[in-house]
Length: 254
Image (cartoon, rainbow, N blue to C red; front, side):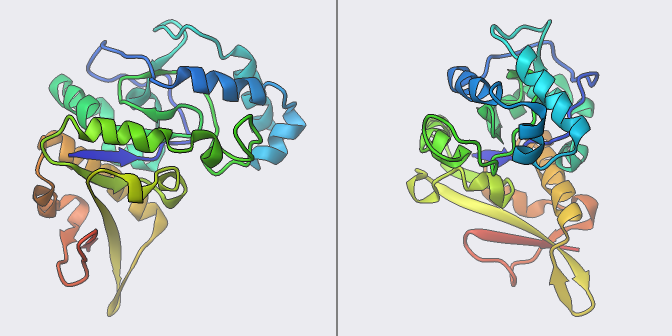
C-alpha cells in the first residue's frame, strides 16, 4: 500500500526530522529541463505565470538562478523536513521517530510540479511551481503534458514492491490530475473528509488539508500496510462513515 500527498508552497529549511539519511530525486534530469525554462522568465514574467506578488516573484527568480546540480546536504534538504503547508502541519514530521520516518520513505510519495514525484528523504532545493502552472516547455503547454505518464509509471513500479496494490490518494485534485487513474495497476481509494453542518456534511478546504496530513501520519505511525485498517482513523475527531462511502471514495466525518 502506497499513499500520495500534494506538496506545500510554504517551505522551512530550518525544520529537522529524526534522520540524517537522504536520497536523490529520481527525475532530476527532468527537473533541470523545467529549471532551464524557468530561468528564461524575468520577475515580471514569473509574477504573471505563478499569479504571485512582486516580492515572491523576485524570490523565485533568485531560486531559479541558484538551482544547480549536484544536490547535497550543503545546498538541499529532505522533502519531508522542508514542506510546511497545512497538510504537513497535520503530518507533523518533526515529531515522527526515526523508524517512522523510514517507514514513510517506503510508503509515502509527494507529487511535485518541479520534481515530479518525491520520496520523503529525497533532497530538494527551494522552489515554487504548482502542478497547474501553464509553463510552456519542450513537451507541451503545461506541466501535465510535461510529465505525461511518467508519474503513473513510477507509482506502478512502486506498487509492484508492495503486497497490497492499493494507492491511497490524499493529494489535491490539481496534483492527482498528473496521474492517469485508468493506468494505475491497483486499486485507488480517495479518503474524503467532511464536517457536520446541521443535517448535512460538507467539505471545508482548510480542514481537508489538515485531515490529509493527519491520515498520512496515522498510516505512518501505525505502519499500515492493509488499506482496510485506515477505516480505524479517528484523529481530530473524524470517524469512518460507511453509509456515505463507496468502493473508491471513503468518507470520514466529524
